[in-house]
Length: 344
Image 1: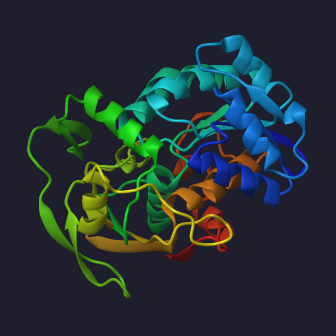
Image 2: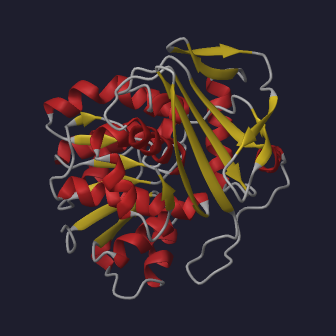
C-alpha cells in the first residue's frame, strides 16, 4: 500500500481539505499542507499532532515556483481549494511538472470541462493521471453508474437522484456556485442528445421514488451536477439527468442557510444522503444506490482512495479520466464500506 508516502493537499485548511488531511493521516500517509494563507496553514498544522513545520508549504495559484516547492517530493496532490475555475489549472500544471497524479473535488461543471479539454493531451504526454470531480458530486455518481452498467459502455439514459436531508453549503460551495453562474450567464444547463444545452427555462419540480427509507420525494428536475461531465466522458450516453431533493435545493438557494456544523467527534454534520442511480440500456433497467452521512466529509475517503490506488499502480490509464474510467468501480465502492452503504 502507499501508506508512509507524502501527499500534498492544496486548500488543506478549508472545510473539505480538513477532512482530506484527517483521512490521509488515518491511512498512514504524510500530508503536506498547502494553500495561499500561511497563517491558516500554521494554525491548522498546530492542531494536528505530529505534523512538522516542513509539512507546511504556503503557495498561491499565481506563483508557479511556490506551487513547485509545495509539491516537491510528494507522491500525489489533492486539490480541495475552490473555486476550481481558478485553482485547477495551475495546480494540474504543477502536478504535471512534478510528474505526480492529481485529484480534485471539484463540483463545478465548467471547471471540470476545462480540465478534460485543456489537460487530456498534456497529462498523457507526462504519463500522469488527472482525476477531476473525485468527490460526492461527479465522482460518486460516476462510480455508481459505471458499476450499474457493469460490462456495458453504452446506455440510453442515466438518471442520478440526490436525496439529501439538508444542504448547509460551505463558503467554498457558495463561491464556486457564483463563479459557475457567472460563467454560464445565469442560464440553466442540462445534458441531452449527447451534449450540454444551456437555456433560461427553470428546472421542473418532479417526484422521485427513492429506495426506503426515503420513498417518494419531491425533487428538482435537471438540478444539474458534475455527473453530466464525468459520466459522458467515458460512456456513450445521450441523456444524463440529475435531480435534487427539494429541501436541499431550498437550503442551497437561501442566503441565510448556515455552514455545516460538526455533530460528531469526526467533525461530520448530521446531514444524511441517499444517491439513487437509474440506468436504462436496451430496454433494461439497472440501479445502484449509496447512502451515508455528510457530503463534504465523504468526499475525503473518495479522494484519498483514488490517490491510494494511483500511487500503488491501480489506475487503469493515464491522462484525464473520471472515477469510473480510471478505477474498477465495484471494487472501489466496496473499499469505502466504512463510509458508504452501497447496493449494486
